Image 1 (cartoon, helix red, strand yellow):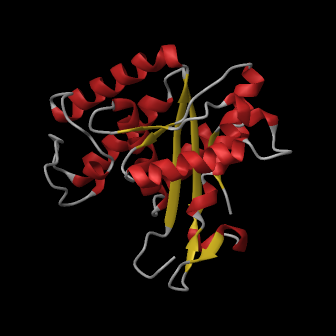
Image 2 (cartoon, rainbow, N blue to C red; image 1 turned 120 degrees about the horizontal axis):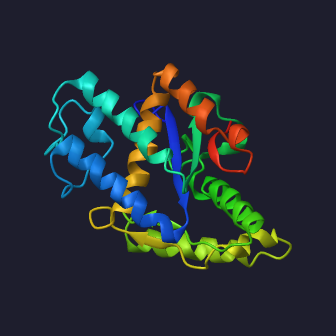
Length: 228
């Protein structure tokens, strides 16, 4: 919440049947080939929006065309039948006091240590309705210490007496993966990054995404969800 920080927060990605994941990767590789001339690159959402992103693999240089390509890529991925969107969006200026805690320096900040529980809850309810089980894959950028803490927090939550039984549908271990080596993680990063950019002022794109992919529209607990 500090001056100069981002006005918004997006966390989530997508849900997919494990057997269908190769189709997601195939679509992503085709999108990378179309935009970069090769699929052998780590393509990030920032490449479409940053004016001076280092080692940008995109062939097109025009900023407006890059932005349009990013929005088209978002649609391509989320339109895959086997994919269900799951992304939580926070407009910090509209965030309720329940989402804000005090930092070590006494400044207000979003409670990132507990807010991640929300998509886990949505995912578990979805799995329970489908009589299925699942695992969470997470971008492994935070380092081993933070990853171990996150897994401990998750396992503690699963063991909480009186907790919702649906969360047992999710595997005990969160799998942390390097986006450079795992394209499924690249896709999640891209989807959240494009959505975050839409929240940065492109209200028409955001409204379009919400209209097509909102939780109210899907009616299965998944989708793009604004929390305040």
